[in-house]
Length: 459
Image (cartoon, rainbow, N blue to C red; front, side, top):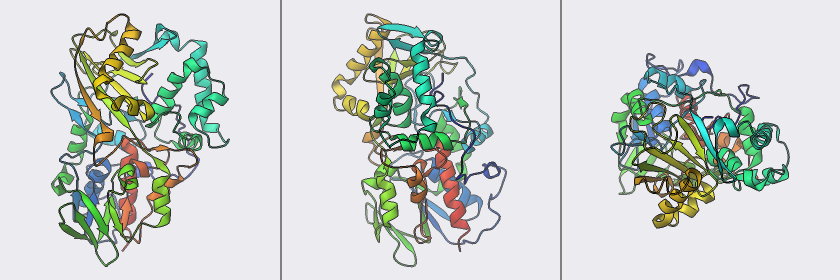
């Protein structure tokens, strides 16, 4: 079972679809927009997937654009670890979630090889290690499946997913697996994710059910290849701290006091950066936008890459689920990505991530103990060689991994956030994605297309 594949996504959207297949990226087109009413200049804040794609679309349309990236790297939450293993490792976005998406079509233009091996998961349950086939044919797995399958139909009070599991009388020893698939996969833990938003996302998902991973490419290399014409527009190490849109032009000011004048601006910063007010807007954003920002969750998360002398897991292992501080591991180099295949990725979000990251000195020991419990003795700790921690929470201009619905809200906040402000300020990024596509690369790209579509068709 691939990551994200457990949550059954409906191929039929109930409504609100704003992104249609005929708008999919094609590097062979000059401009995907037939009616260009705008002829000014555009500034984009952030050079992640949404920012790069927005710049790509603008340049294809002949519109002058400048991208202001706060850090010294292009890619945002798409990043690669080189030289740690015998293959490049994705530290951020990794899987392609859905075969009916802009990102899937774009990646196919780069012609990568996809992993085709049949990967099998490992489960550690009640002190016993099970293969995927064994556990996935158990009554316990069936119980979790039935509860998760019913999420899309949930219409009760907006409780947390943990409260939902308790109402459904899910046994305590199955909660870690439920958290791994429902909380951790959605960017947090089940105590912090709201059922109303989760159910809405499940109903609205339109990207398809297939999950793919590239065998011979990392995500960043594909992103940079596809949107190469946008890269010369990027100014690195330029954190925008103030956006003044009260005059005829929009004035952007960076952390050193430099100013840049544009006719319109697209902000692709993470929702956590907006919530923490790292950018001051003058005048202040409308109350609906401020409320939308506060109604979208985003918090702690990490990827920890663990290197071992040799693999102690079976060939063609997918994910490894062990109750404990890390909800999910996976064999990063399996499926033909690595000859040595001696690397595991530990993936954590929410309160689990916060607890581990508070004590980096004991983090590795706790995680190795968790692996030892599953594989027996000191199997993992005796083979441990090195690690690399990608703590997304500590990235000053990102501050987390990806957004999730919090209790008491709905995903309608994403549509509100993506509404233009006085036809001058536009927002894009995965937190603005509709159709339940938040937390994905294709959601970020779709939101950028939507922003550009509005911008170029407004005089």
